[in-house]
Length: 306
Image (cartoon, rainbow, N blue to C red; front, side, top):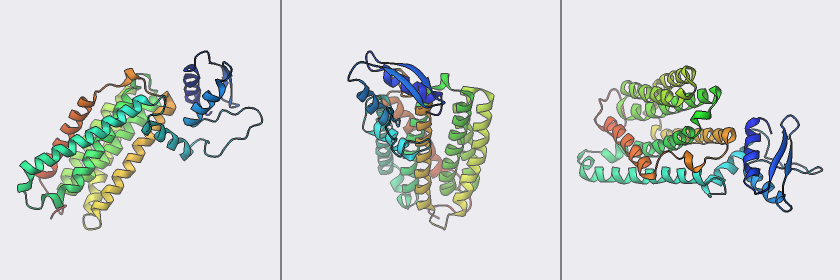
């Protein structure tokens, strides 16, 4: 155990077992005293192990992969969420909303192509990559946003600043790169900055002006950098790079969600702030706005399809 967040997660996990409770926790010496009924301890140990904690009795040796910063602990978190493990039901439901939103957006884009965009010469060759990547990226950011919003009222100033910076920089860079690839550096910088600064403001305000400043400054810098990078790579495997960039951003957002889990523990049913339909409608609206920018926004310099 390395912080009070670990203690809270352990206490919540133990408390879910009837009659069991944590009597004391000593984070300095990594020692916890648990009172439980006969036969409960092993179940508690198994559940804590799924969350990345080894509960060791005197004389037992620790297994590798559970130290602070271990990749194993992050993998356990993701595995528990994907497989709908006990205690991760709300996170699993949020993940299903994100996947459903991707399906809805891509279906809507297919209809738009059949009705409108098929008349544009070379449309698929130019926009297929950013259409797919935008659908995935928007869903990933909405997942992270609703996850962070669940703990907004109890976030510390440090967590709020990290949230604003993460959303501002990641969102600004990604959207700046997408618009830069389809429209050029000027519009890419403008849209990237506006996206990053807006995300930084909305997510960083939980801790006041410091979070807002961190988020907006991060969005300002990242938006221009994303557009500039697309302009530089336009003739150097830009499309594969956009896929690599999106995958990297997804890993960052997954790490951010893991940070929230470490800080606050699992989400509860009341933490879910959006239904599946609301999630899908918001994702669809954001994708359509960006699609209009990609297709009909002014183009400067060399861009995809030119």
